[in-house]
Image (cartoon, rainbow, N blue to C red; front, side):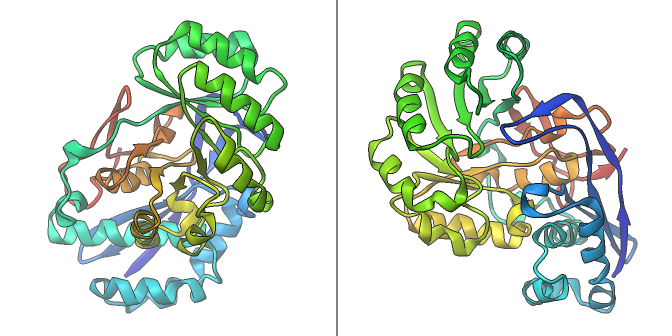
Length: 337
């Protein structure tokens, strides 16, 4: 297989801020795998939180060129099982290659992956639309503009968190979900859970830093709302350690290394009784489309990355106010504009 790496810069429609960082653009990494006249697309949106940059991810991907050159793509399970050693454990690089390989295989078979997996795309949950951190008035205005989205995910981690949520609730009757991105402590989480439940919030995502995992046991038992793991839910190996500390997990392809480990996470999470969300970084339609085909397997989605950018170079899964329309085209339905 011939491997090619592209580095498009994704421009956000407006500055996107969470509790630890802001960004106006994303240096994403696209992998193209070509064989027999068919091209598969994969993506990694690097996150500094996990030690990734566009340059580091590309360097890791380049290490796999020789490994992939003479590989049989239909032996993809053994191929992907050996890939972590080749890229030295770089999960973002794994994700880009993994999703490109799956896309190629689906296109070779001439079928979308949801059909190859025997999934009904009509069972895909609605996706949330994310409201990044800003001033109270600006977040209120963003919620007002997002009136057509039935689910909003609100980023918190400020001194005004409760005031923000009250202002947003005044503007919308949408389902509200909260992501604190590790900004709270035990006391704040428990207090906020009571206030947020009164405002009709559905759940809280990753309230505390991942290294405070043992303290999550108290929150698990005392929180007025369910709590979902994000930064604590990276790979399949993490899931058993989350029992009794979280009620659900957030799976992101770029965190775990792509479709292959994401499927493992879904099955392990079900065995342990977790609710499951599939989330994303700021990504183009390449990454969003790949993740969306797993949608019918899970309980909730946060796959709005491609609609937060103004210059998506690709098409695939469409997002119509939170309703994801999975392409009936082969693979993940990804095409270059």
